[in-house]
Picture 1 (tube, each protein chain N blue to C red):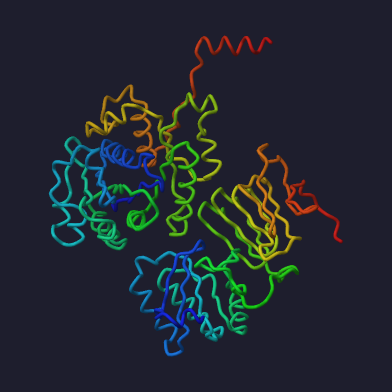
Picture 2: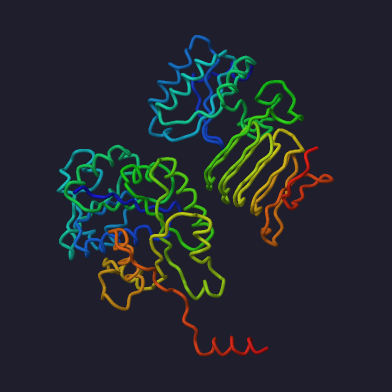
Length: 268
Length: 243
């Protein structure tokens, strides 16, 4: 069986590409899949930190491409998941150290041994983005319910359509149900209305994401209960694997006071 | 041109413009076009791949076959040729027949910011009469960052998203939601109209008029924007009796 290459991208920075990549790769590995995560953000590597593997780096992506090591030597085995590997980016080089065809070649080498290859794309639409998208079988677009992030996602969808990588699938990250219900934040429907692509997942805002990133332990690995963002990532992984998982209900449960207010208003 | 002669111009000069890239090829007749371009494109391939390209061929005279070859040359380098700027009238005709644009959109200045003595399509004044009856049909959503320019009417079956630009010498019909920027009658045709099933643009322009959509949101029904009494107004899009 040949692996599927998933590229996680967004256009805008700071929407959670690296978090999504780390959690999805981990969640897929937890489903028993063989997974390699590749950090394509050469010069600004982060994925290793979020996955807690920074101190194990010996070789990186550029070393493979420039022939200083074998592919296997640069694949860092995850601390907890036996079938999860990371190919880190080089920190001391820049995006031009790798070409799109290098990435295609690299992924083709990996395909036979893996089920999924998850690539973390850098922000922007330049060389680094093209490197990350070149080998993709499926592009996952991460956006936030925020006008500028949606605008950039729209641009990205246009670019990947032009590269004939399909329209991609959408992950809406950092949704705050309270703000949506107050009308202060775009709803997922508002985002879909503009982007008109298939929705793969909705990830609620969760403070524990930050804690987990700082600890180098993706949230999906934390206790299986009580983590709605972690749960949402596990759902995304299962959907990627072909399972039909209903979307989480993120609507705000009405409190007693809000029901009372609604009742009073209804009476008037 | 006189300014160009004074300094040593490179054979091929590549610039980023709003619509993609503009490539100017030196007029000096001793440099064959394809050869000069081919070397440059091959050298900068990684940088240029995927871009939309306008080529300024200066005073060279090119026929249909040479234009087709030019298009193929760019295609071979993963680039899309959309416009050829030429000083020679026959060449411009050939460019139009090949379905390419002969000028860059909108601006009255050249890329260095100098006012153009003549529009890039030669000494002709901006067309006041309706553009030639050819239309561009796009069956897709025009997303942020796309710029469409056509020297006729444009019909889009799909949405025009915020951050996208559609410019046409004629009218623009959007069978979908219009939320980006549309400039109809971009060469000065004030009778051009802009229609959309949902008219909620970032900005509308017809000829040299500019309008911003009111804040009260899109109408539920299809609307048409046109110039009435010197300003752009939106009105329900209804079938008009043929006149």
